[in-house]
Image (cartoon, rainbow, N blue to C red; front, side, top):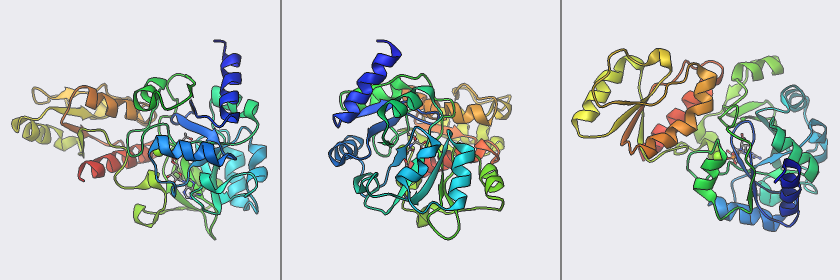
Length: 325
Ligand code: TXA
Ligand code: MG
């Protein structure tokens, strides 16, 4: 099928209340018409997500911000205009006529973003309205960064999967809550914290998981079946030996520069990323590989927590916390 025909089909599916999985620069989304309550209920059912958890609403053009939100604060506008299209979500008051409560778990706020992915933009612009889309994985599982990941998780339950190849960023959007008196970051992601602070012209706080209502921020999230253990690179050899001696299958995920020269026999080294951007891009695929290899334990050395490294370290921490449950 030609790309334009596929987009036309996807638009028809959305208009009929169906579900379309589509690529974004961060992860694949499970899309439904944000103004159609029945479509949204089906999306929540397929995702297996509680209907009280809000999803992100995607727009095709930064100019649409005021169409779907009301009383947009200057901070939100500045962030949106500088980062869109791009991996940043702003939480603002929703316009109830354009975004229905089913998309936001009944909250009077909405998370909006314009994704930076050609197929996604084509779809959004052809559709004209807003597309509500959580990541296209079952609730609590690793986010999909390829169409194959979506198929593995949701095949049969979505009406159409648009294949845009692997995601260029690989971790979810940074979420900035602009609905209170002072902006705060709810989720680290594709736009580094340093960049958010620079655009706001002042430091910005990160609200910790306990205070948050965002499920993407639940401690137990982003987990493969293998137990993820976050370790410093100097501890890799000792920890690996310990788990191997107990008869477990053990793997290592670390930046190339942090893979020890000498490693215990039997340790499976997953293809190491060269820098933090590549670490972000391949992270979820590597977590899936850990399961395909049948690993019991994945030792993960986080990158330095600057730039995209902060989001990678955050996801590894959450995956490790999930394994501890
Ligand atoms: O990169 C992304 O953001 C991807 C792609 C598909 O755009 N989407 C994504 O969606 O990660 P999801 O549903 O897996 O995570 C959305 C996060 C959740 O943690 C949700 O609670 C939070 O955004 N969120 C959405 N609307 C919110 C609101 N009104 N208030 C607070 N948190 C909100
Ligand atoms: Mg998600």
